[in-house]
Image (tube, rainbow, N blue to C red; front, top):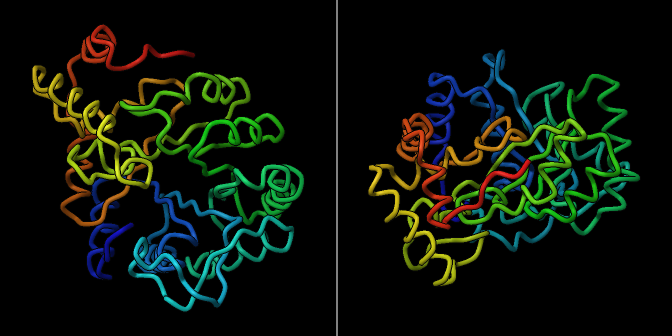
Length: 295
């Protein structure tokens, strides 16, 4: 995202992930406009056993003009993505993903960015995925979303297995626990917490850092710096607190994060394994820097 990743680096990252015990890899047609899926499929060829793979539907690919080469510099400039929540669009899109992944079936299929297609997601796309689950093509149905209100609407009106929610339960934004997480627990929907760095500002809070895919405003950078400075008294890196924070909530079953280099992946692993003081979260709450957990 936002920078080119050589094929060799992508292969090396997946090698390191597998050898380090990471057993869940998420991708989507949107990521590199098919490049991400092809790379995952190639790197996992012959060693898929024990690794959970998820991809997404609702934003398939077709020949056209790529208007996001700045965001996905490794993408084919002659391919575009579009929204298609029709029955054929969902089935054909997933079949195309499986071909790129070199798989016959997959563990999880997420409805991708369905905030503008809520009714179609509920009434058309979900039943198609339910049928494909019955056919053994997928094992679980989920949503992959950035925002709480549309996610809540879809969870209320379907029987999802899982929800990948990005950026809404972090050191800077805990809005997912207001209604979304309690609803998910009530309906037995497992939560994958993604976007733990809020697109980058919680990894390195400097001017120009990204927050929710756009340059972070000064207020957000200042908040991140305040948290970082507070953590220094506990000798805790900001990245370690950010990576482990979502696991505070019982709705969260896994944390999902991206990396663009082997070095970044190593840093992510170190952040996840870093031993936090037992009183860290209560101290952050007392300082008014985070909210108490709401279940």
